[in-house]
Amino acid sequence: MASIWEYANPRKFMTTSEVVLPWTVGIAAIATIGGLIWGFFFTPDDFRQGATVKIIYLHVPTAVMAINAWLMMLVASLIWLIRRHHVSALAAKAAAPVGAFFTAIALFTGAVWGQPIWGTWWEWDPRLTSFLILFLFYLGYIAMWEAVENPDTAADLTTILCIVGSVFAIISRYALDFWNQGLHQDRFALFDGESDVSPVFAWPLVTCLTGFGFLFVALVLYRTRTEIRARRLHALLAQERLS
Amino acid sequence: MPDLGPYTFEVLLAYGGALGMLFVLLALSIWRSRRTQRRLTEVEERRGRL
Amino acid sequence: MKAVIARDLRLAFRAGGGFGLALAFFLIAVTLVPFGVGPDTDTLRTIAPGILWLGALLACLLSLDRIFQLDWEDGTLDALATAPLPFEALAFAKAAAHWLTTGLPLVLAAPVLAVMLNLAPAAFPWLIGSLLAGTPALSALGTFGAALTVGVKRGGLLMSLLVLPLYVPTLLFGALTVTRAMGGFDALTPLAFLAGLTLATLAVMPFAAAGALRVNLR
Image 1 (tube, chains in turn red, orange, yellow):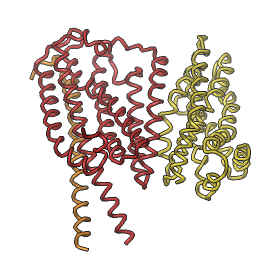
Image 2 (cartoon, chains in turn orange, brown, green; image 1 turned 135 degrees about the vertical axis):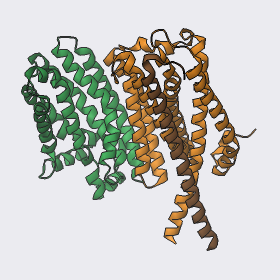
Image 3 (tube, chains in turn yellow, green, orange; image 1 turned 60 degrees about the vertical axis):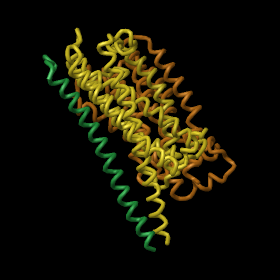
Image 4 (tube, one colour; image 1 turned 45 degrees about the vertical axis):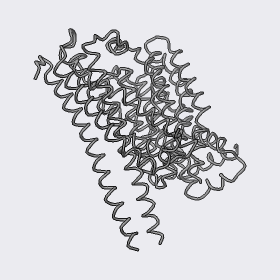
């Protein structure tokens, strides 16, 4: 049985991802497009929120993936820290912009949804605020990768950043809950228990969640391949400069 | 197009903006990949010739 | 470790040492507020806790790159790396020196500036208390940010981007303590949270900063 660590070898990763990628893209496309069409065209309006409930099919999957992306980056960074597999570090680097975009989409759709329902584009609700901070963490992480010349140093420093950021994200969440006493928590109660969401909404939502999940995987695989090539390019150019 | 009632603007804005951002992410990823591929091929050809 | 702190203090107080800069910035920033917001004393009283905390925070931020940058540039940091002092202790010493030269003066200046903003008398001890409890966290987090970006050319902006989100909980509880005190509500709870946060930060940050220093000094 091949060990997962085999894929730490860049060449093995490239050949395997080449095979896996088309399938991931295919499932992502079907689930995402299918789920969104289902949700947008074939679901009823909500009693309280009218047609705006359709935004759920974008807002929840991107919000969930925004968090998952950071968690994946944390795991990948720890693998780099402990086992020094370059593919892992590059995978974290590749995932960051995807996570950042998902966070931005979650914030945007949340604000647009909130406007007719809460009467304002922005609320300092614990959840929205912690997402804003998460977005800033993503930007900082990406900026750090760009700012440091040496790829290994960049990998190490961004790993430290990712770990510290994760610890702070957890602390901030509690702090923000305290700060705003979760005034709007019940508005999100819908999403906390799937049993509260009627099946007519839940199934398209699950489809979209699946779709965005596979979309994330596809994008990270694709981007990691680019990062591996970029690393090789960087090394070859450095060699050229020396000779 | 289903009847979005009084929320037509918001729903379309949310979908339009979100899908637009997704498109940008995809476009950027593909552009970066193509660019890196191209430059890598250039350098490797140079090395091949040496 | 004491030697490191003493040296940093001496350097800060020397001409061009930047000791007064943070303080001056604090004064200027707070003075600017009524011009931007209007001189209505009631408005100023309401926003005073936030302004004072924000001013202290930004003043701290400005002086962060001094923590390691100068030593990095003239090779002192490399020398310190080979010294028997562990990186964790070095990071702690640097944070302590930063607090003594920046944080502490801000705490002392704050009541004076609070008068300008019409802060309610009842809130003054809470202002001082919250700043005393919170500014060490700002120094510790700033030291971490400085350690992370020490090798980056013109890394000040990047450092701010990294450090500011980390400052949010401290700012939140600090300003909340003073606001609650003004309204006559329980201000001890947020203050306790703030103190706990600072202690946790002081416990963890030296290790994170040391890790970053080790990477950068390889």
